Structure formats: structure tokens, C-alpha cells
Amino acid sequence: MTKKVFAVSDLHFGHNNIIRFCNRPFANSEAMDTHLIDEWNRRVSEDDVVKVIGDFAMGPPATDAFIAEKLSLLNGKIHIVLGNHDQPVAKFGQGGMIQIIEDFNLGDKVKVMPDLYSFEVGGIWFDACHYPMREWPHERINGIHLHGHVHTELKNANLIRQRRGRHYDVGVDMYGGPVEITPDLKHLNSPTGWKV
Picture 1: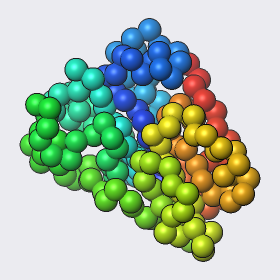
Picture 2: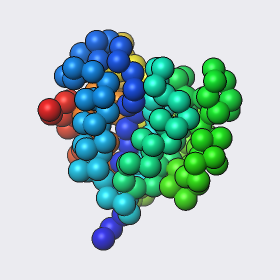
Picture 3: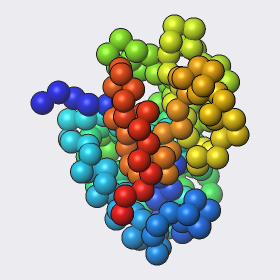
């Protein structure tokens, strides 16, 4: 089987308020978390790679053990670019993502990547950062910028896309789960929203 590459951001596992903030179709965070895991595993095989571009979990239930459990339930290798709600090191009573990976023996499955992370798929460069950028490292050679953070509310997103066609919010609210990254961008150009 050929390894596929996916991207997603702003999952917010455990975060009840995100349901209201983003009009997610769930009664509570437990229902949302179950759907996110099921949808992820429906799309992603164990051989695939998922680029999580920030904000994996948030809220009082997001303890180190909670985060480790969610990571362990997801298919594929996971590369995490930290977002504003992810902690790289101990803070707020959490060990931080790096410590969680070590403490729960997730190093073969999960890796923390730099804040600005570039990768190639089929000869096309993708620059991933949790925050939207006006310019990105591979822009001048037709590279694609993948981001999250704005939960579909990026001001002038259509203007940016029309001007460049290379700037994508891969937030879970856009695609309902991880979106497959392909050189032809067909999945990125077809946001589906939530299918519950």
C-alpha cells in the first residue's frame, strides 16, 4: 500500500466550548472526540502520515494521559506542529507535548516538528505553520502554505487564494477530519465541512 500524507489542525480534543465557538454538530466534547477519532481512522491507515498543524487538545480534560490516549487511538504516524493551545514543555500542570511523547512511549508514532515545517509530496513543497502567513518559504517556487488557527474565519482568505491559489486552512472545521495532501491539490480544493 502506498503511504498517503494528510493534514489537519484545530482538533481541540476535550474542548467543550469549541463546539459553540465553531458551530460543531456535537452535543458535547465526548461525542466530538469519538467522531474525530472515528473519522480520522476511516481516512487514515497505519502506514500513512498525518501532519497535525496545531491545537490538538484543549480544556480541563486535556491532561497528559488524556492527550496520550487520544494520540494512541489514531492511525498513522503523527507529525505535530505546535499551536497556541499546545504546550511544548511543562506548563499549566501539563508535561508538554515533548514530555508526553517520552513519558507514554509514543516516540515511534508521534514527533514534534518545528513551528514552520516544510515537507514535499510529489514534487510540491508544503510549508506548514499553525498561523496563516502572507508569505512562506517555498511560495516563489509554487509551494503551498497549510495553516490552521482561524477556524475558517481568515479575513480575506478568498482574496489570498485568488491571488496565489496556494494558501489553505486545513482546520478540521473545513474538512471534517484529516485532508489528503496530493500534488494536484484536489482534496484541498474540495472542503467538505462536517459530515455527521
